[in-house]
Amino acid sequence: MTAEEIAEIHHASAGPERPWSASEIAGMLASPGAFALSRPGAFLLGRAIAGEAEVLMLATHPSHRRQGKAAALLAGFDAEARRREATSAFLEVAEDNAPARALYEAAGYTRAGRRPAYYPRPSGAVSALILIKPL
Image 1 (tube, rainbow, N blue to C red):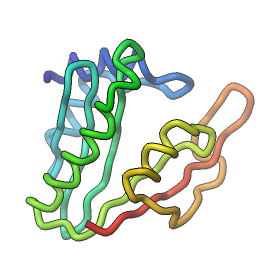
Image 2 (cartoon, rainbow, N blue to C red):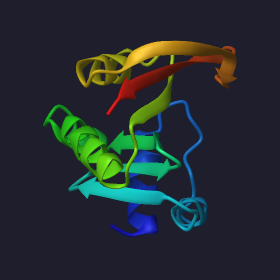
Image 3 (cartoon, rainbow, N blue to C red):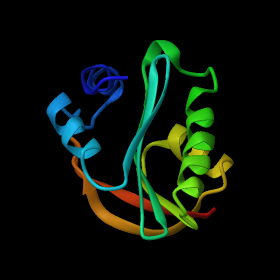
């Protein structure tokens, strides 16, 4: 999947978040340890470095939701992170994103911290939850 295709899916699925541009995605993928996984209509951007892995972004186009693609991408992330010798994984999720929180909980992530007022929203900033998982 190209950076442009990833940006299109992210734009369609971003909700209240500012979608990343194709050039921002390409730049992130050029950074050390970065990788992308995809399924039709869905993608995951991750990074694994120094024994730790991070889910940077996971998005599914609205027309492809509720098909198990995000869960499959998270399982693929775990496998790729282990292949890159990561022993733990983390991510940040908006506190008000109940579907994503349920997905991550089902995948074995637990809460490790909170960043107050991290994600801007028209009605006021929302905190980010920091979730972790041993690999």
